[in-house]
Length: 445
Image (cartoon, helix red, strand yellow):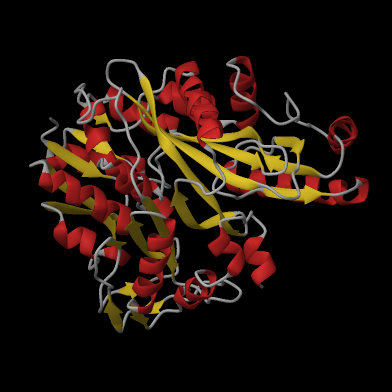
């Protein structure tokens, strides 16, 4: 097993990785910005290094400072968490070229899946279902209009280099497409340094379902079930659950087989997620993208499958076999994750501030992965995620019951918080029925 691990991230995911590292006897090293010096992940690490000011470009995305911290602390490996440098192929190569262990997929896989158009083409060649769309970037608005005519309106306009729900728009006709094309292209150039645009079929009513894969050290790729991620605001997830209420055993078999093919097509190693859109009317599903990293929502898979995905990541990176039998993976029960964010529960606008009260719920089947405690300050420099509230039950009904009690028992005062939204959602008839889609939040508002 790896002996020392530098965690190139912050907040709840850094704290969560450190927890597993310490359980395994791995020396955990944190890097942090000036603004995060007092957060729990820093104090709980065996060693911590400040890598710059609050601006993430000068700290958590500062590859030179992070590599210097790894050298100075004698780190053997680097875990990037999610976000920041986690899907940066150049950083993955830098780590490997320095003789350190990169806890994630290889740089080639990150590169292959980082461009949505290239990823779509690779998946189609591997026999993974792909929605109708462009196989090359739409370099002009005229090319986008031609593609839309072939595909049929409405269409999704996407930044080819985008991710995390950013750089997307929907066009219902030619006039809308002209506007969305320029908007998405401009955003992509500013945010990703790549203005390439993809035009793809848009499904007015769709569910967002993803499959957790793990590329093992021996070359095999296994799938650890699916997660439903359809409760979203601004194309970004708020709630995830496993298994999906919409997936039948027969559909699950097809989903998992397609995800394994996707991983095999790029020689995938370590943890990753194959995201798909499911058309509930036809039962068809289509490849959306592959996230070449650990997902925010990985805890629901951990609870349903009884594995520690961070431990499995470390084992793969070290060339070790998994702790489980790949031929005997079995899902049990139901898990739901709620993303507790520092944002108002109506318009979901961020609201940072000093944490005056922080009381976490307790009880059977309740888990909290938190980035903050009372006395900390939520700053405006980073993502608004405060904590992840995860509940587990023998079935979905019990998980919902435990989720309601846990939300009622979670107290946060100081920053704005979206806990009231979850109290509303968990009593919403559409959500409770399990028959919901990505438009549920908009219908609630």
